[in-house]
Length: 313
Ligand code: G4P
Image (cartoon, rainbow, N blue to C red; front, side, top):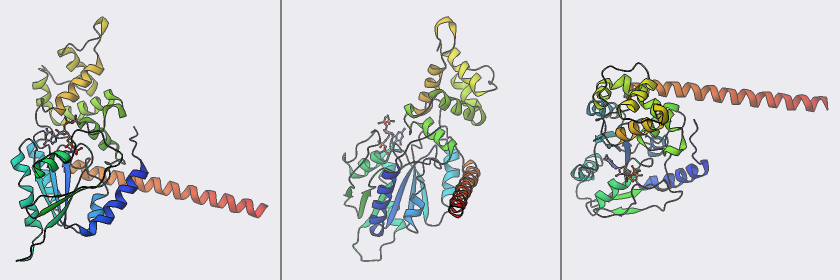
């Protein structure tokens, strides 16, 4: 499964952020509470350096509250990081963000300086909705397909906080295959980018393991299916997602499962835990190291071949 992100755009966004960063006091990183690890932009940690950072776990209305609390505890272990679960369905929660910014950037007494913040997040985590709620008017477009370029915006919230929107588009994790699937399950990667049924099978396997009761209840199952495919078939059967000849329409069943998850109809479900993220991070680092070693070995072999040819010639 390949996710296409354009290196040129990534590079441009990084350069632009690097340029603005010295003028920033605090970074606000928006994550999807259901996938705080997979919805991270891998560059944010490097770009923010030692600036204080608020990690907003947005869409917490859709995530498992117990898992979200574990994530908050885990994320706050990092120096200078405060994590906060929010949902834009409750604007009052969003409006508390400036107060949190003031706590993290102590302004020396008597100083009238604004706190300069930068809000970062991969597409679809709810960044525009948060900006609009904070500004009290529509500034950023919501629900858009990722655009190619976007001018940087600075919004003075007139409460001592100046908010800069990130220039360009921040890409999600691409090195971890499971993260790609989770992003697709939440709808952050548009459905056309990968096989719909594969994405639903990934979700089904995880829900069977992590939320069996929610599956039993939502789809009125009498016993728990043993495998992901059996779960999808059972959903199809229960919801009359059938093709001619009475065969189960797996595509329809996949749609049902994914749509009902995304809209919260199955309940508040998270797709990853801090423990899973830690284990996957180790795996990804190992894979990347192996890839790099292979690349180096190939380079060396090519070099030897070239110098061999020169000696012969
Ligand atoms: P972005 O700027 O980060 O790309 O995200 P944006 O604000 O456009 O929000 C993406 C989608 O997520 C929107 O749905 C928005 O309504 C929804 N959303 C944002 N915050 C929350 C939240 O706290 N809870 C829930 N449940 N949904 C939230 P959309 O317009 O329907 O777009 P799409 O889902 O069809 O892409």
